[in-house]
Amino acid sequence: MTELQDRLDRMLAAADAQLARAYPGSRGHQPVHTVYVPADRYEPTIAAAYGEEALSLLDTAAEAVGADASLAERVRARLARQPVDDLRVDFEDGYGFRPDEEEDAAVLRATEPPAGVPASGIRFKSLEAATRRRGLRTLELFLAEGGRGVLTLPKVTSVEQVQAMVAACEHLEDTYGLPRLQFEIQIETPQAVLAADGTVLAARMIHAAAGRVTGLHYGTYDYSAALGIAPAQQSLDHPVADHAKAVLQVAAAGTGVFVSDGSTNVLPVGDHRRAAWQLHARLVRRSLERGLYQGWDLHPAQLPTRFLATFGFFRDGLPVALDRLLRYLDRQDSGYLDEPATASALADYVLRALECGGVDAHEVPVPVDRLLGLTRRSRT
Image (cartoon, rainbow, N blue to C red; front, side):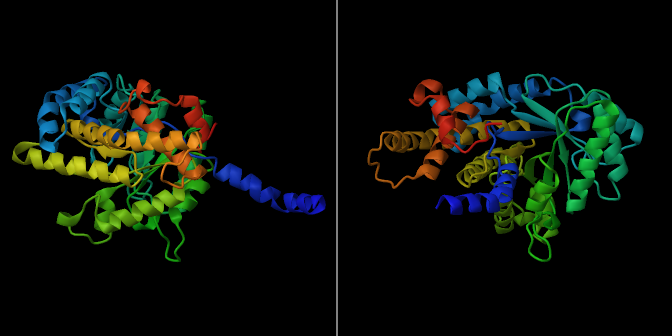
């Protein structure tokens, strides 16, 4: 048997190494949202301004979606402390086409990161032929003038564009002495999901980037429009959206690449504010139930329902998750046939609840280190 074992170890050594390299495990502490701000509206103090507006609307939003007072108070504390997890200064669709001098000036403003935001960066114009040179000019100017953070590559239509982005990163690193650059891929085109032969291009894009891709972000409206969906039916919960995001989840599983849902453009303003809050809260909850723990927000009035829905999701499920997890750890019957994979998912759920602020440490009787040990998160 030892001879056979040694033989199979040799046969599978390359496959083992490739699996470990390409699928290192999931990453921890995913932002609950990315807030997009058009570049011409960006100021380094914008997160505080968004937080103030969100706080002023919280009670009305909570009443609109039926949130109880204790949940609203927890969200109030979060909005006062950290209203934005991740912010993207947008030089693409949210900004449009401007004279070069005007966009250059906006890029220089964007090099100063937003105060009080753990993660931030820019979305520059795509590497499509029509916008490539302006997109690269924005990217280079941002990095050359000291800008740092997350880089979002939009409207990707081919693996070759990802490879071109890798080449651009290598050039900019060498030119400006930068640390290794990474980027998100925005999935807004059918060409970025499936090839004509059925190949999952999103998976090929991740692996073509050799560890540089950090996220796949679904673009609701460009993708829906590309599939011929009428504007009134374009939504995060349309079947074509569900299909695309399911493909992205499969492509990213185990790679350490985050998958983010997109946005709803029905903003909570004016006479239909109440209905827009209800829609936003429902869509956020729906995404969470489908394993999409991040989405986009486009307006400060969406922040109350982002956190009300997120905290509600985790708090509602915490008692059962903890009961199942504790019984698994103590080898007791829980009424579920929980296996190691399920225990890992339960631990990850509890960690996400803690990380987003929906749950406090004293509510979780399992040490964080033990929760981490149960998960399939990468240790690197």
